[in-house]
Length: 377
Image (cartoon, rainbow, N blue to C red):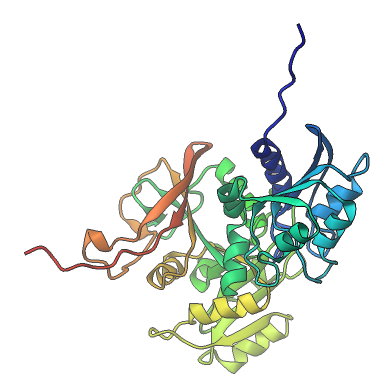
């Protein structure tokens, strides 16, 4: 009796392409993560992904890795092939030239230079094109790119480690170490996946952090200090430019004498407008970072920065590392948000909950704030 061999589904091949795409995390920004798989009669004959910004895209990488001619095969790609000239030539032209029978696309590219055009080009050349296979997973993988390309603003992740009773430091200001060694490594992996990391002046003065990802392999992010009056010492560890670059966001109120100290060490000082408290206007800072092609920003600042981001609705993601500790009186993770009724509370959706040593890591996304309604009679 002959044994029938099961042919894998489109979804299975797209999952493989998603796993490949993830390998580019921390290296491709401001480009998206993209993976590609080429299949003939149920066999994978080539795989590829976008390795690094400025290098060949996933489709071209897969074509270069093909072990046999691609003509007549099926091409799986997590994001619509680009149809415009950027750092590299249009991928859709290479796909058309390779003459696959079918192309399966996970998600449409939101970039107006691409959106729908790559798919239309494939169909004009008689290539059967299927879209929307694991679209939600493909879009979720590129949530950073999707926000950046649609708004020009970085995707903002707010991260803090806190005790079970919601403190980020004891009453004396001690915060080392709330979380476990495993959570510290997790934090460094999180840093590696972002273009930049931001803290406030208080964090620098209290903890003198390095803000590198030294516990894991990978590129250190750009470091940003929000220091309205340039109170931080230029000798602080994170101003050592040898391992990573650091810039400071200040206001016009910062003394000229302090600015010259930073300039003498080669540290760029950005002068920005102020919010209603006289501090650096964070929306203006995010706009500037977006113009500098910073697609993702990790915020590890103290309660002041966290509160400002949350009050302004500027955070997209929250990562809370909760340690099984109770300290009683201490420094709250978040200050007053002006919320007086529970129905006004900021809402989040848990994307992931995992163990990290003895800690819990809560990975959540902010949802639109509910509209206030009239109080019950």
